[in-house]
Length: 315
Image (cartoon, rainbow, N blue to C red; front, side, top):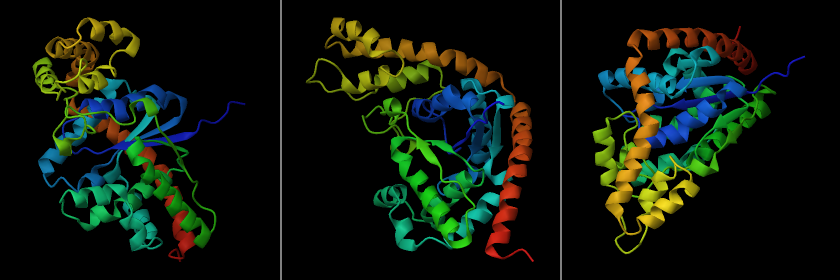
C-alpha cells in the first residue's frame, strides 16, 4: 500500500512586482519540493489588504503571481492553486482563533513590530495577521510549511493557535512544522539588506534584461575590498561558489566586470521563465484558480463543520 504524502501549504502575497528574492525564497523551493507532497499553493490576497489599497493592482498582481508559479515550473495538475478570498472559511476560522489568543501575544509578532517601527500605519489587519495565517495553515491539516527564516514565527503562532483550540475544545488541529532552506533563507537586496519591495532594493524576476541590468549595476559595493560582497551574495544564487571562485579571483577589484558577469548568469536563468510567463493567458490563470478553489473549499468546509460543532454554534 502506497504511503500517503504529507500535506504542504505555502502562500505568497500578490502585493507587487515579483523579484528574485521571491523566486529563491518562495517559488523555487516550492517547485523543487511540491511533487513529493500533497501540495497547496495559496494566493494570499486578503493578507495583501494590510498594505495594498489599489483594487486594479491587486487584481493584476493576483493573475501575475499564479502565472509566475506556473512559469517557474509548477504543474497545476499536481498542486491545488487557489485564492485565499475564494475560501470564506479562512476569515471565519481566524476570528475564532482571535478569541483564543491575547493582545500581548499578538504584540510580539516580528512583522508587526518591524512595520510599526518603520512608521507604517498599524491597522487592525496588520495586528491580527498571524491569526489569519494560522487559519490558512490549520484549515488543511497542513504538516509542513516552507518559510524563510524570518517567517519562522508565523508557523510558531499557528502551532500556538492549534494548541489553544485543542486544549479548549478537544483535539481538532494538527500542529505544523516549518521547513526552512538555510542556503537561501534570506536573499540579499542591492543594498545588502533583505530583498524587499518595501526597501526598494529588488531585482525584478520577470523584468527585461535591461531592467535586470539596471538593478544589478546599482548594487552597492564596498570600494575598500577586492570582492564586492553584495554582488557576490546575489551572484552565488545563480552559480555555485566553486564556479565563481576563478572568476572573482581573475576579476579581483574589477566591480563593473563582475556585475556584468552576474547579469549574464541571471539572464540565463530568468529568460526561459520570462518567455513562459508571457505566454500564459489570464483565462488560463482563472481556470486554474477556479479548479483550485473547488478542491480547497471541499477540504476547508469539512474542517469548519467540525470546528463549528466543537465551539457550540451548530444547533
